[in-house]
Length: 442
Ligand code: NAD
Ligand code: UGA
Image (tube, rainbow, N blue to C red; front, side):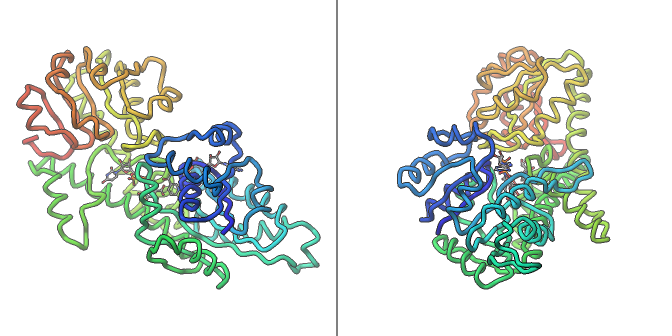
């Protein structure tokens, strides 16, 4: 199948590379010339495990190419996936200007049947708007009065991959959701995904769009639920790790996404919860449950900072070390990362910050204030610190020599915002260790 992917970011690039890997001819498009230059040189503009090798292999097999031109990609392809950003507007709505802009450009270059597929996360009813935009922008030669002389389809195929394990997630999906209005679109999409041998769910477009928003919001709700439980655990002497384990053993609940901590971040959960609240509002439904999910998430960061303040007495002029800046491990993505929000809250109180992240420091440098000291190792961070915060659970933080850390610190206090470290072992070494929701014992 000849496929174009418009938008070569975390989703577009992974989807494009993986679709090439399963045998299709894919052209990835981006309007950022630096990205296209980097990709053409055989390099990645993002960090995502396993992606570079797969990209190089498929470029070598001539199944994968890159361009800045939507026109060229549209002409070459039968199926066109939209993977451009849908960032939040000030009122929480998804900003769909990127989607409209790309739909217009595709329409202007259409010369034969095309299937235009939403892969970006979009509110219900976006499919209808894309159809109308294409209709309005087709070249005049394909219009006769109100009649359209060129056949095309719009479909929704939401993406469920997670950053950090994106290639694996794309290749091994729990389900492929296909929202279509025609048999032809259904058959084309089924054909594209056939090599994955995944469970395929066929729906109408609005249902597919809803499945994506509902899934992300449900996962965010699970995290806020366990963070609320963690707050009570701290007060009554229960351990949230045991509580999550006990809940998760019930197959109807499941253990995943029950990790309490400093709350969810990333480019998706915060914006998608906001957007889903707005979808409800516009349809006449007040999604109060999701408002609370969002409130709990925001409160969790503030609680964490207050907790640090309580234990350090004063934050002003304290040297605070931070391990982890990315919104989760195995990515360089810092969008809405809890670590950055917490650092900014601490800096507002006058703290001095030393920070380290294995992959996200270049991105973090662009947004954190100049008085953040970026260190080249977790050990360097610890030098002279009054406390250490673990804010992203990178695997390398499990293999630290804490004797060396203890000797480098000025006060041996650790706040583990991800319940990742062995608190008992750290206490035995003489640290004061504080997790999230670990009760009075840890
Ligand atoms: P991203 O910012 O990493 O990538 C988007 C890319 O689109 C950028 O490279 C940008 O330069 C490009 N772009 C913008 N306008 C363009 C245009 N007019 N023409 C060509 N390229 C253009 O974003 P992302 O994280 O890949 O997310 C894209 C969409 O996928 C969003 O709707 C997001 O919610 C959704 N999504 C993201 C993830 C994830 O894990 N990141 C997972 C599932 C769904
Ligand atoms: C999430 C979803 O998991 C994907 O299915 C979806 O495709 C994607 O959003 C999207 O639509 O963009 P992602 O944001 O990449 O994926 O990463 P997650 O692993 O879901 O983590 C999101 C945030 O929740 C991170 O900040 C993570 O630290 C936090 N989290 C996750 C918790 O605090 N507790 C948990 O138990 C799990």
